Every structure is written in C-alpha cells, then in structure tokens.
Length: 442
Ligand SMILES: [Ca+2]
Image (tube, rainbow, N blue to C red; front, side):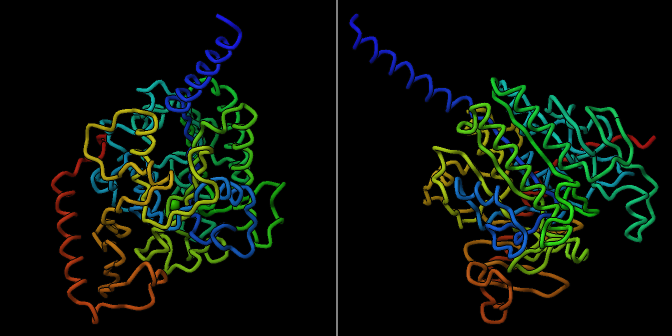
C-alpha cells in the first residue's frame, strides 16, 4: 500500500471513529436552578443581573422561550425532569415533600440516570434532590453513582423557618454524601461553590467515559446566600449576587469540559425547576413580562429559561419559540444516547430534531396542575384555558403571553373545547396513575 492509500485509510478511520464517538458517547450535563424566574437572566431581558456565561452559552447554543414545567413547585418539577412524566402519574403532584414526609419517588420508576447507566454511563448528582429523603428514595438508590447535596429545600430547617417567621419545623438541614449525613445546617454561602467544585472534579475524573452530571443548585430558593467573591457585587442586590454566582458556576463547568477536550460531545442544559417566589420580594426573582410566579398556574409559575449547548449539533444563537417541556428532556437524552425508554408510560417527546433546527413537529397539549394538585388549565395551539380562584380565563398565549386580555366571553366555544380536552387528557392520567413509594410509618 502506498503512502497516499495509507493517508486515505487513516482519514476514513478517523472520520468513522469520530462520528461514532459523537453518536454513542455524548455526555449530558443538566444544571437545574431552584426558583429562578423567566426574567432573571441577561439573555431573557434582565436589566440589572449580569449573566455573561449563560448569555454566551445561549449565543453558542439555543435559547427556548416557551419552556414549560408541569408543576409550579420543587418536588413535582424534579419528578417530571427525571422520569419524563406528568408528576400526577407518580402521585407526586400534590405540593412538595417536607422533612416529616415518608413518601418519595417510586423505586420501580426508571429514572434518567438508571436508563443511562444501562448504556454504560457514569452518573453524578450534586445538589438538591427533593424526591424523598428516606434512604430508599435517595439518589444513590436511584441511579446515581455519586451524590453530595441536601435532600430537600434549603429553608427546611428550624433556623431558617424561624428567620422567615415560620417556626413549625424543628429540623436540622443535613448535607449528605451518598447516604451519609456529613454535616448539619451547613453554611449555605458555600453551596454554589461547593457544588461547582464537585461537578468539576466529577468531569475531571470521568472525562474518558460517557457521563451524566446533574447539578441541582439549592439557590436562588430562599434563604439566599452568595459567597464572599460574589456578595455585594451585583446591581441586582443579594438576589443578583446569587444568580451571578450560579452563572459563574456554569462558566466554570463549561471551562472544565473544554479543558478535558469534551465540550463538543457534551450536551449542557440549563434550566430552573419553577418560577420565582414573588412573595419574598427582593429575595425572590422575576418572571419578566409573565404574570405570577411560583405556586401559581399563571405563566410565571410554569415558564422558565432553558438554554442548551451542544456544539456542532445545535446552530449557534438559535431560538426555539415552540412549546417544549421539561418532560421532553428524558426522551431526548435517551434518543441521543441510543438508550431504551422506561417500560412505564411517559408524557415527554424526543425533541432532538427540533433542537437541530427542524420545525415541522407540533407540541402536545400541556396541562397545568395547581400547587396542591388539582387540574387547573391547558395550553393547546396558541390558546391557554385556565381557572384561577374560581375565575375562568382564555388567553391567546402566543400574543398575550402576559395574560392580560381574557377572551372567555368572546370565545366561549374555544374555552369549552379546551376544557373538554383538558378533562379527557387528565382522566387518562388518573387511570394510568402509579403510586409513589412509601415507607411504613411504624
Ligand atoms: Ca423550586
């Protein structure tokens, strides 16, 4: 074989190997903020909080403007993300888990990390879990090889409840490593930095094998804290400091991917679990132009930022205005990883093609469930029907995303059509509902 033939053979070998590597070895990083609102990032119009790393991530990837969470609080949102299901299917749709809760994610559910482990992925979870804190429900029993974080919200301790005038709880907030409590009531100003260090260390240790890294920041859920490097730096006040520290963490994680030469075959997803907690005023975020926030079925409670970076696959600086939900993340990742979907019914759809610029697929009707579980509304096509405090609303949600102009009297047939569809879709979920896991109280 002459030198030219050898060169051509080497080129084909390289192309085959690199294509193959991209297809089977894509890593996944999900960074999930807590209570971060639609209007909290520069790329989503915030006028005072600086988020250069997330803004850059948006210019290198795609920004979604209709990214919906099928819950307006923490526990059900996380259940939807890691199972691809409406939380009601898992009986985790009624508010959140508290330190006294005995309930958690059904151990029979096949969570995203479990499905990826079947494909040889190494999995790590750093941050807030909130899918049950009895041992059987914790991350290392549910598909994660490594875990460090808090099992429920950062305000669920006696000290923090007292600070906000609610002293019903007398619990200490544990910091867990695996299943073990390594600290009680840790200094929360360390959280963002500590989780970033754990994420970078995980990437450095596992860059040679495909991995799934889930970084679930406990912030900016109240009580909010920023570390010394960030405290007092933002014109957005302490809340701005917290967001800017999370933004910096995203930049640090992407830098670690680059340093290990794997940023091009790693999909990084940044989002939030629900809208901003407006009742905490300057310690809560902003839903931007959207009405309402956390705990409400107004758009501000359910629509959050989502930025996805996957170089060479997603067109830089693209924007997806079509409705996508956090339930779509699991089937999308599983499709890219050539894995198998869970045996149980899920609601999310694979959006890989949409992310790559194809706009031919239609979104599915989206159901809104209120804070304590009851069905509250539906969004289908460009209309949203919702019932809030016994008042019925119909909005042309594409145009009137601020939910200002109620069309219920002008278009009663449309409202009726949506209501019927909503009840029918929910009734199927009721029939197919699966119980969440329980621990015997005795
Ligand atoms: Ca939350």
